[in-house]
Length: 335
Image (cartoon, rainbow, N blue to C red; front, side, top):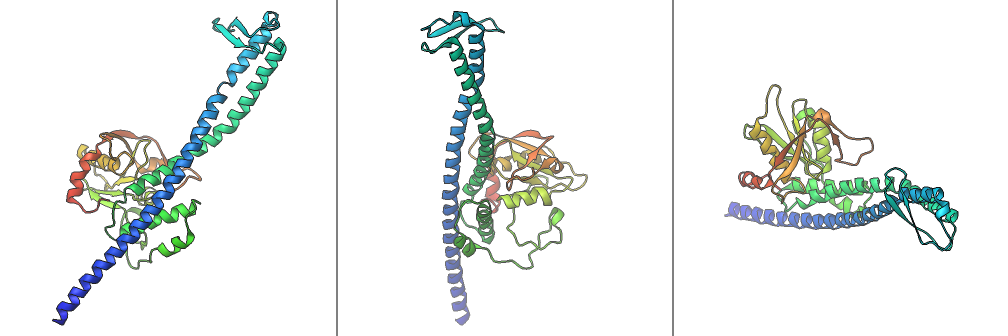
């Protein structure tokens, strides 16, 4: 009877412990999702503003053309004239130039030259700012996409992967509470070794990527956050592996592990492409462009944010994320 009582008590303890972990997981997931969505919204607003400023600045050349044409046709600029129609220097087509009737031809030309210089300076100033905003937006949208895939708590690895996203956002300066960060810091795991790729023999205290197996039995690893993505691409990937990612769409880094001499056939490539599409922002799409290449052709630019890479010598395959549901039905690793 005592043994039965202890067993029942253990089951109750495990139930409430898991329930507590689920609450903790959901709370952090919502907190991070709200924060990163707010950051993304601000960046999109800023990007739109820069787009509008750059569009206005693109008119700089038109004002230079107006000024040159007015200077070449000063004899036609009579007092009180509101518009000047003259042929273009190159095409010969008629160009209609709006004039200030209260100013002379030279004064109108000078005003156009000043407008040209102002817009040109604006373009030079806005272009790098716009580029920086879109780079940051790409990074933030990638994190946002990863967070949406943490649907529910399964085990401690889910919690570790989520906390690593929180740690990354704090390191990147996105204003999360440090006190919350310290409370959520995962406990160190001792004696847990992951024997994959270049990490063989190293004690691993981080969260682990998702794992699947292709139709021909090749291991497939999928990053759940940028720490895992950087690790898969920069450390785990071997010379014979293939690296997959959705084309120009935020998503996970996906690695098809291939031993020396092995060749992945069409079914393997399609299987991995479907997974790459599923673990991306385009999960709800019917077909998603996925690139794949050898890991040696994937580079991390100097100063790039976590998870950001560039690649070359890629091939394109169309992933079909809807087919992954059948895989998840056979596997408990899905998010």
